[in-house]
Image 1 (tube, helix red, strand yellow):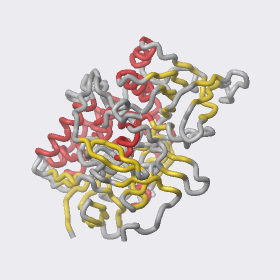
Image 2 (cartoon, helix red, strand yellow; image 1 turned 180 degrees about the vertical axis):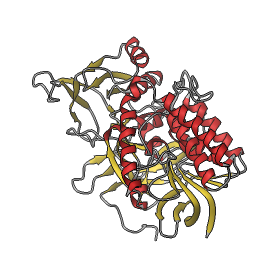
Image 3 (cartoon, rainbow over the protein chains, first blue to last red; image 1 turned 180 degrees about the horizontal axis):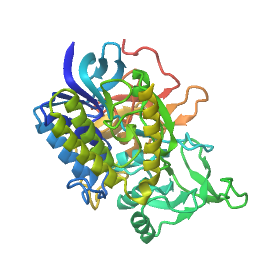
Image 4 (spheres, chains in turn yellow, blue; image 1 turned 135 degrees about the vertical axis):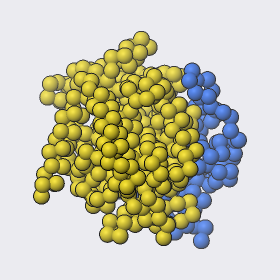
Length: 368
Length: 110
């Protein structure tokens, strides 16, 4: 069977940064992704990123993705395996099962990093399975990667940064955005993004939600209504919007099925996105040698995913004896500090609390 | 619908290069798309949104996540069922059909 020192599942921002970090100490890395190119979901992010990370602040996601992908391709210690899905992990003998374009293959890595990212949350309402109801990420993929408009007129649900940014990107692609609804009394995302939407004349309706989607075979319209303080719809406040696309930007869940299957201990922390793996300060799960980074560990930004990737990468290199204790400590401190800075803002308060709750869980596990 | 209407030509940030156009078939009808783009995007550009009918209630389904996570867009390609239209790349001459329920167990090619 093929072997490698480090197998990474997911070549998004977290996975690539971990690969580059570990490879810089001589770790032999196999970087696996079901897509045919590294970059993950950054490839559809046309907006400029905020944050502190190296040169990434002020850079568009598509550019960051291209840069990371090129660095991964150039690195002689990184082997990219595209169009490959990780099917499962036999923890007893450490075999990773992969479906490649050439068939099923086994791979035995000394260390495994799961950086599988996230999936979009569904919202419950009648008609939510009609074609035309899409995740916000799907709309981005369709128009920003493949150059196809999702429809003529869109109802956006959710005013977090994704909802605001994708509304703006729809307008850039020449698609009409009828309205953006938000169940909370205030806008969830950054004011700078919300202002751009308002300047385009797109109404942002807070304390509003979708009542139902209707249509024979596809979305032909949506009924929205006002909701009260107990999140109940107010009868009589309904509005009928003639839209052919309903875009859900109602949050993400860690894509952690692989970790469940592998047998890592999981815990439920809503602030981090739902079920997340229990992991220590080096991003190691309760399975020795199995690490996590990025959205699968907590739903955050690409910038934090990159920093977590670096942290996991250096920790893995250290565990393989590729870096001295002193050098490791210095590097580790740097990435931990960077993560603290990235999470210093008021919008990260929930994340910081969620991570504290996770630390408590980890502490319980270690003391047993 | 003319497939070019839904295609973005002018974009303030992105450039979409004209790739090679290929013919393929949806439910026997000839359509065109770009070689290598996902089947779902070629179909969507042609105005086709219903790709699948659900197992229990035969509800129409389209794609939802567009990145291979959710299996809402399963279609039959050249007789093989359970192909994700959102990630499978379009090739010239492909015969794509709507999948009803679980689809045929074995490839109808065999």
